[in-house]
Image (cartoon, rainbow, N blue to C red; front, side, top):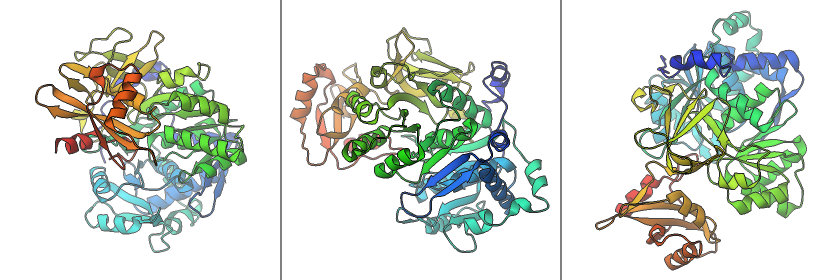
Amino acid sequence: MDFDAILLPPRRAASVAQGLWADRTINDELDACVASCPDRMALAALRAEGGEDRRFTYRELAAMADRVAVGLHRLGVRRGDVVAMQLPNGWRFTALYLACSRIGAVLNPLMPIFRERELGFMLRHGEARVLVVPKVFRGFDHEAMARGLQKELPLLQHVLVVGGGGADDFDALLAAPAWEKEADAAAILAGSRPGPDDVTQLIYTSGTTGEPKGVMHSANTLMANIVPYAERLHLGAGDVILMASPMAHQTGFMYGLMMPVMLRAPAVLLDLWDPARAAQAVREEGVTFTMASTPFLTDLTRQVRESGRPVPTLRTFLCAGAPIPGPLVEQAREVLGTKIVSAWGMTENGAVTLIRPEDDDERAFTTDGCPLRGVALKVADEAGAELPRGEVGRLLVRAASNFGGYLKRPQWNGTDAEGWFDTGDLARMDEAGYIRISGRSKDVIIRGGENIPVFEIESLLYRHPAVAQVAIVAYPDERLGERACAVVVPRAGQAIDLPEVVRFLKEQKVAVQYIPERLELREAMPATPSGKIQKFRLREELKA
């Protein structure tokens, strides 16, 4: 495929000159691991759902990458072809990306929870030549779905099945034969390695509106984020990285797959989230760092507290994707003995802001961090003019890690001639340069000309003991234009009504104009694969 990553060439010279693009690929990093620490553990792939755990040294991991790469070449995969994968965290995920990189193919990681509608669009749009799926995962027959889709996708030449046992079994075709020892293997592996500016990853955003967008990244853009990220967190070869967040998301891909190789450190992968299994892994593997969303931190804290079994090696837990409640930070610090780091980022650029491990704990629940090296931020008005510190406006990012563009949709790239990318988020910046996300630019309720601070009201309601999930959304009003509705998923066994919402927010000294005037209770929220609440669906329901 011809990738239209048009945002890369204009910033190449400056990024290289500033030392932000190292002009290396994951191939260079893996080769360096084999040269410097071949017998160090590279990967421990643990199975919470059952099955065999698997471990690899760096020597073994590189050999497997070469093996799968030659096997893919035997199937007709060539440089620039897209290999899609709908796998849970595991060694095959890591090996498949490293293998694609060996022969210049582009990996398209897909969340295991996607079904025909999402998968059909992504596979067609990305022109995938190969799709790798588990036969069954969490009780769902992925093989049957993939076979059905293949009939509608003429470019999809191969569906490979992990655990399939048939003619298209992943292990039988790629992982078992010693392809790397074949006579032509060296020539195949040497002849099609990608450059640092070639697209290496195609990953679809789980946006809240419209069709998914195919984000294109090169080795330079991904590594330009991972290096300063590891620097900020003081991570190195002596660390052990646990990744239970899905590797089909940027969090798991960048910091659970790529970063350990770049650090020459071990990665511990968990195929699905299980707090008891995660706590056990931390203790047995000596895990020092992990990154996940707020519910993971809540679950791990509860597990350790209730079991009475500490996790003394876990030095840092980076939490992103949603605000971290202050009480949770305090509980996690007390129970886990772990530094809680807040962060904000996007698929398009990886982590953008992190607090520093040296910061006061309060920073973790009052800010989303300050920019990493190589990142510039601007809080701007609608015309793009920078706003004074403390004012809420559009958050613009200019970073060496910014993506190469949206595949086949350059009109959506959202990047101006000076390289500023419009994140679609609203934020404010304090005098120290720390930001706080205030909501989405399309997530604003204007009630009688007054902007309601949706994010802040939601954050307050999350403190209510009866609230498990909440979303503040607009519904139309003839006189005021819009009013605010609180859509709430109550905690199990708890009850809440509108008078209680009003009482609670008044107790928090919230302006009356900001208090929702309607309450809707739900058993569950409509959500994207990454767990973001789809407010557009809630708004449509309220209109109906």
